[in-house]
Picture (spheres, rainbow over the protein chains, first blue to last red):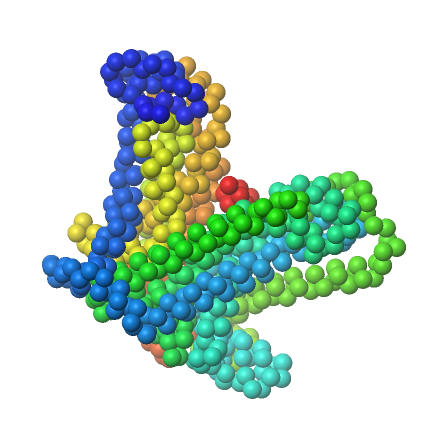
Length: 338
Length: 297
C-alpha cells in the first residue's frame, strides 16, 4: 500500500490530485495532508538519519574496513581482499579468544537461565501443594533482593568480585578457610589457568540470575492458574508442572532471554576487562571482544580488528538463528502436550 | 502484581487432603525456603561486604576480610570523591546520561508513534532496520564510530558521548514504545482530529501524555543501561577530564596496581551503585511489571 494513510482505518479512499500522498480516511484537505507528511518526515526522518549515521553506517563501514589493511591514521586504505580473514584464522591467539567466547556462549545462558527458572518456579508455584497453587511466602522480598545485581554497573561488579577473589584478603578465601578448608588460603582463583575462566563465568552468571528470575516470575504469573490446577488434578508434582505447564507457557520469554544472554555472553568485555584485563593466565579468559579492542586501539590494526568484529557478528547471527530454529522445532511437541 | 503468587482466591478444587504425608510436604517447603535463603545470602553478602570494606582502613582490609571497621572511615568516601576524581566523573555521568535520555526518549517516542500508527512507503523497512539494531554486536561498530565522531569533531567530548548513547539506546526505545502507541484506541486520535487538532498537536498534547506510563518504564530501563555503559565511553572518550563514572572506576581500580587505596576503591563502588539502587527501589514495581510486558511480545 502506498500513500500516507492512518494505519488502522482500512483502505485509503482516493486521495485525488496533489498534494501527493493525501490522507483521506479522515477528510481534512490539503492542510491536513501537509500536516501529516511533515509529521512523518520529521518524526521518523530526523531520528532515523541520526541512527543511520551513528549505528547502521558504522556497521557497513566495518565490513568494508575488514577487507583493507587500514591502520586508522593513514589516509590510504589498501584493499587486501580476504587477507585479514586468513590471517586471523591462522592466529592462535584469536582462535583461543574465539573459543573462549563460544564456551561462554554455550555455558552462560544455559546455566543462568536454568537457575533463574528454578528460582522463579520456587517463588511462583513451588509452594505447598495443598490449597491453591501458590509460591513460597515472602516471595516479593526474594524478587526485590534478587534484582540488586542488575542495577550494579557491570564494571563495579567486576571490581567487587576481583576483590572477593583476592587470594590474601578476599571474601571467598576468607569464608572457605573459616569453614576449615585451609588449602584455599592464598588460592589465586583468577591467577590460575584452570580456575580463572570458571571464576569469571560465575561472576557473569551471578549478575543476571536475579534479573531473569524476576522476568520469569512475571511471565509465569501470566499463565492461567487453571492450567496449573488441571496439571495437579492429573497428579503432576512440582517438577512435572514446571516441565509441562510453566516452560511451554513462557516459551516466548525464555527465547528472548536466551538471545539476550547469548549476545551478552559473546560480549563479556566489561567483566573480563575488570577481572583480568590482560586476558588471564595463559590467555585462558581472553575473549574475542578484548582481542578486538586490543587489536584496534592498542595495535592500531583497524582492518584486522574489523575482520574480527565481522566474525563476532556472524557468530551472533548464527546463534540467534539457531535459537529461533530450536524454539520452532520445540514448539510443536510442547504445544500438543498441553 | 503485588500479591505473592498466582492470584487464586478460592481453594483449588482438588487440594490433596492433609493425609498425603504432611511431613514430606513440609520437608519440600523447608528445602525450597533454604534454597532461596542461600541465594539471597549469595546476592547480598558481596554487596554488604563492599559497604563494610568501604569503611575500613587499607590495613584493616589486608588484615581480615571479616573484621568490622574499628571506627568507620568516612574519609574513604572523601578520598574517593575528591582525590580519585569520582565526584567529577559522577557529574559527567549525570550530564551525559540525562541528556542522552531526554534525546533518545523524545526521538524514540516520535518515531515509535509514527511507525505504530501511520502507513507510508518504507515503513516496514525502517522498522526492521531499527529493530535489527538490537542484535548487532556494538563491538563491530565502535571502530568506525570512533572515526565518524572524529570527523564530526566530537570525539573525546561529552556531546559526542551523548549522541552515541542516544543513538545506541534508540532501537530499544522504539521497540518498546511502538507497542504502547499501537494500543492507544483510534477513537482518541479521531476525536482530536474532529476538534481540529493538527497531527503535531495530537502527538504532543494527547498521545505523549497517554504513553507516559510506558515512557517511564523505558526511561528507567534506559537509565540503568546508560549509567552502566562501559564500552562506548572507553572507546570514544579517552580524555580523563571527561571520564564517566564507570570509566573512572575502571581507571581507579587499575591505575596503581597494589598501591590502590582499597578503602576508597570500595567507597567509590558504593557511590556508583547508590543512585541506581535508589531509583530501582523507588520504581521497582513498575519496572518489574513492564519488563514482563516487553519481553512477552
